Image (cartoon, rainbow, N blue to C red):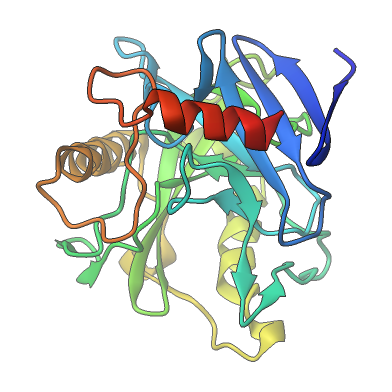
Length: 283
């Protein structure tokens, strides 16, 4: 669907409809002011807290939020600290972040995003990695054949997981594929990826190892000697991060500055006043 242009005193905002969710962009790309809000048919929602983790729990089909389309360089992420947790570009030392091209690749080599309703608790030391969580939703590398749009919410099949240690923090990388991808029926566990997509897992590990080196940072390291763990292991890690998210949202864990408003729950802190402010900001 082509974008709708909405005019307001705050400027032009672009809105797109995708599946049961839609997006509304505020500001210009590659600026500090850019935000992408996610909406359902009920109105603005938090992609961190309101989108269910499971699309089909019995079949282990998960919802994934796409933050970064394949082959792009802008480091986009859910903004944990702002109301409704929009997608924004990461900033470090006052500068917008872009990943360098790691030869022979261009930007991110998969569609990159996160599983909603998960959280890697920075107060919890993971027994698998002996490092605490990175304070983010768990990351996903979607390895299908299509380039997906930022803000897309897609059904994925989990295949395995990589345990990266990033500056001393646990930073799990889930390997998954869109359920509509032509290879989805052939990929059921991590070993199938090497069989049908030879070289991709090695390229993935190398990309994560080296992607910060051009900025002067050391190579990232991995638990399990950099081996990818299988689907069963990945599902267990995802469930652990889901439980940690439950502790965050209930207030049992210290999320510090994380905004934990659930627009679609009875606990919603989105009052009439806040809703009016958000509508004004978005539209």
